[in-house]
Image (cartoon, rainbow, N blue to C red; front, side, top):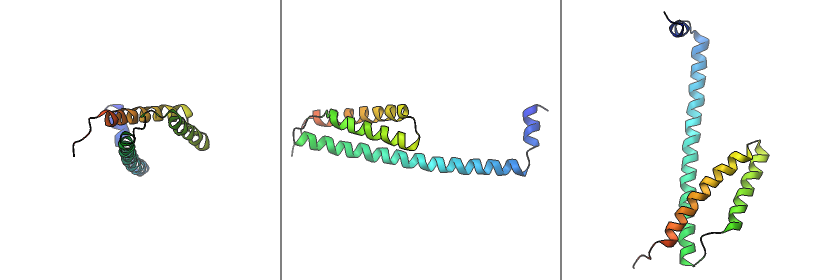
Length: 114
C-alpha cells in the first residue's frame, strides 16, 4: 500500500468535514466568478454603447483623461481594501485595452444603411 492510499484510508469525519467546507468555499468562489464575468460582460456592452455614441457625435475614441480617472479609482480602491495596486493596475490595463479595441472597431466600422 502506498502512502497516498494509506492517508486516504485514514481520513475520518474531521477530514470529511474539511472537504465539505472546502467544497462550499469553492462553490462560493464559482458564484463570485460568475458574477465577475457577468459584470465584465455588462461593462463591455456599456463600452460598446459609448463607442456608438462617440461615432454618432464624432467624438475621438481615445480619452486619456478618462483612462486616468479609471486608473486612479482602481488605485484608491486597492489602497482602501488592502489589495495590490499593481494587480489592479494590470487588470484595468487589460480591460481598458479591450475597451479601446471594441470602441475602435465600432467607430471605424462603415455606417449602416437605413
